[in-house]
Image 1 (tube, one colour):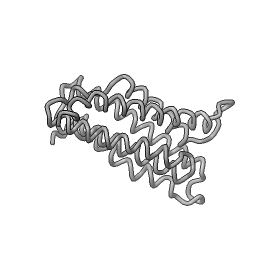
Image 2 (cartoon, rainbow, N blue to C red):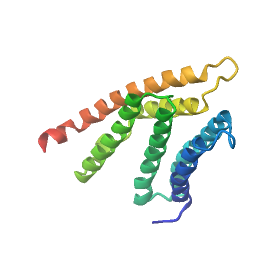
Image 3 (cartoon, helix red, strand yellow):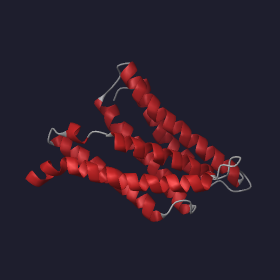
Image 4 (spheres, helix red, strand yellow):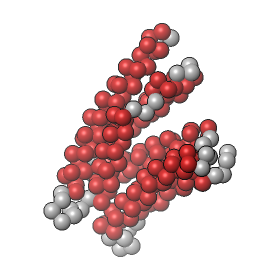
Length: 188
């Protein structure tokens, strides 16, 4: 593995997961609920920024690697799964919504690996629909982690709507990727 800046940022994102989860389990006497919510939101936001930054730096510094290409999406999926599980436990997201999103991530990752083994990975590369899904999902997670109104903005309600939108887009994008891969799946 190359210890370059992009890979270090990816590892940092993975190492933040226990910190992120641990914040929610601090006793109320050590961290009041809204402080826990704020810290968790900030940690998740930092992780999201490092996700963008590691990809940008890998391209800008010509430090792309096969290991980095493997680890980056794994780190993303671990962070999102951890956030969704915490949000389910604190009754901010329904278990079905979390299962849809996590299940899709596992299924599409497996599909991409299978397609890569056939030399067809580009045929299921990230599409614009997947980017919209990711954006709505990340904003929803940030809102549901913070979970407190900001001025007149009903953060919990908007976060909930965005999470339902993300779940819908998750199913839609999964259908899209399966449709792209169907010729290969049918022939094998």
